[in-house]
Image (tube, rainbow, N blue to C red; front, side, top):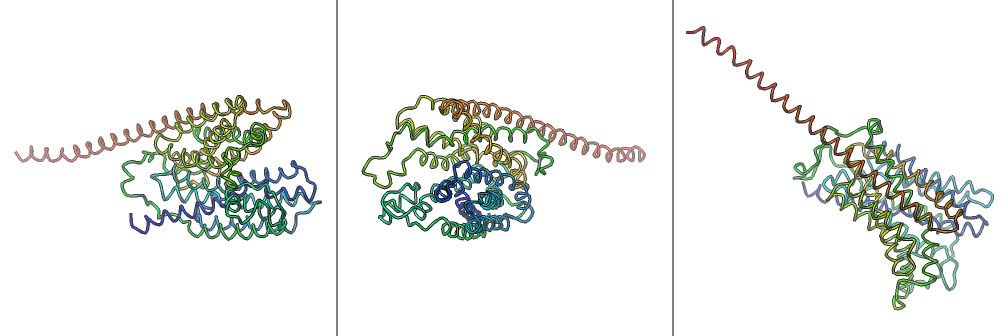
Length: 479
């Protein structure tokens, strides 16, 4: 590996993190829309539709975006995503009004969701091509930025939006830093949602475009020195086209497992703040001497931190023990966590539960793109993972809806968390099926390679014998 390539692949990873952190601000949605609810009198159902539409559009657009990324490279496609994301907020600042809630669905939901969909797959695909020897780890690092985006962004956003005056409700690491440094005392600057949309639109577009300039694919056939001897023998499968991939049981099981795992996580996370807030009853994990930093130590903040950590952790674990085993262990742990939630009643238990659930939920987004690359190659990873990722769009609808229905029917969170645990155990069982299918396919490929090798040896032997016969005949004639 040349020094240029060695440093170049880490530069690509840096660009991936920049892009993903900006895209991850989608999870700070409640910060965006609360001023709209206050000004226009919209209820939570009205604004939540914008978030759901954004998630569905995000998942759907990843398919054509992945295809385009495979053809023209990550830089241009990620740039398209950044422009669309910025445009969505700029248009929203002009179009959104009390009588036009649909304009929020169009701008933030459709255009913004499409921008995220275009840009999201590019850092993942580029990083995996540069790090075939560490696919799980670098995928985890890439998507950790997405998980951490809201964590860093919610604070500054709230600081800009909250009205001036004492007290504030902003949550996020950046906000706590501002409080601790004395720049703000929890109050805001009160710039208004329209000006905020303009600032955020411009900032998002510029940041994604800058990150995209660092993204590029390696030369065809490039690989790290010494990696060939360690790589999985998958020559019989090669780089699979999406049409062929969709016809395999392995892809179907990946998709189904993704739905079960993501639905359970989204179902629980949607109920996390009210349930854990009721248990905490105004308490905090942090001692008084932590001051402003203590505001960060809330259940949702802990979950967000470990969501990002889990993407890196499970990505690395999967590099060591393989993807299906990591999935099985992760989903078993998550199912156990959800089942135990029915008995937690102390701040310490809330802290452990928030960390545990966040760690395992984050791992989903590192394991499934890595598994897709393992089984179907990296050449078409953008398109292939785009199809697998549609499972998240399905989960984005099912999770919050099912969780809400169960809560409305029982007026309690217990049934929702038990149901989420059952879904995780089903996902763990599906992971065993994935492992079995992958092993069977590899064994079949190995057997096919061995047969081909034996046939080649036999062919060479026959050629050797056919050349030896005329020589023997000539000797007999000479005598």
